[in-house]
Image 1 (cartoon, rainbow, N blue to C red):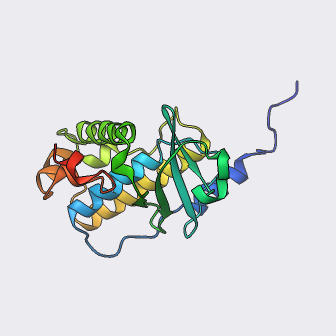
Image 2 (image 1 turned 60 degrees about the vertical axis):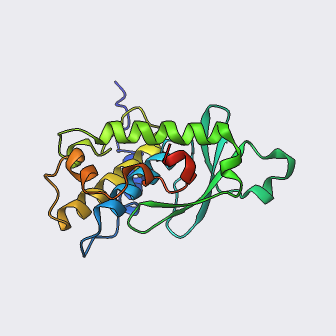
Length: 198
């Protein structure tokens, strides 16, 4: 009888990918608002479709293509007439495996995009606003995600867990952490101000 994968083929590349996405260690406490903002922005990026492994230091772009988000290496000006959807933000992967977003110009002029961002914000707040420790709700293994989004979600979870531990907040509930923020509605900073305050 032939044994499937007798030499563990595929295991080594997966382990290498896991090691390559190990987040830089947190060394000092950070404001809770900053931690949750990173979580919110990063969760938006990781809700997108992509079939490659993002690398810290590279620049990416988030698009809204109909009902889905898509992450791409291609900037809007490089697409020409083939741009797949509305450009939402420039996305930069930090070495701690969180994402920073810079909103595209004119974002507030697209009601469809603003509504989609509002829905993401509302879903994020609902998921975090519980009595469970936030560390228990982090996306360490989201089985329904494809390989690379799942890999990056796990890296994000490890990063946030480390930061919460450095802050002495690894047992704090999401609700407690939200209460400690100045403005939960502004955690997704690419959301136009008038939408976040509505």
